[in-house]
Length: 106
Image (spheres, helix red, strand yellow):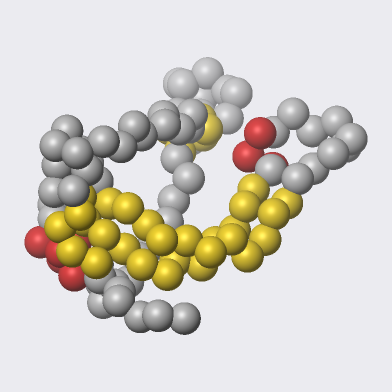
């Protein structure tokens, strides 16, 4: 079974009081984009719902800020190439893989 780690979002909207702010405060999560050719199931999924997918990744870069006094935890990042995508049937039933979108071998 997969145990998904919760991701702490950033808050956007500035420090101004809500009545003065041109933007409402909202949560911003890390974001990825996957072409529908790699995840064709997504074309039938309504936005706003939660889906469970597994990714096969190759790390291409690691950026760690040290000693610059910045307290921004998002300044430390890893970059990845997505090599495979799998839709999980049900995260509560052992995280079984429904299908792999990519079966290419390197």
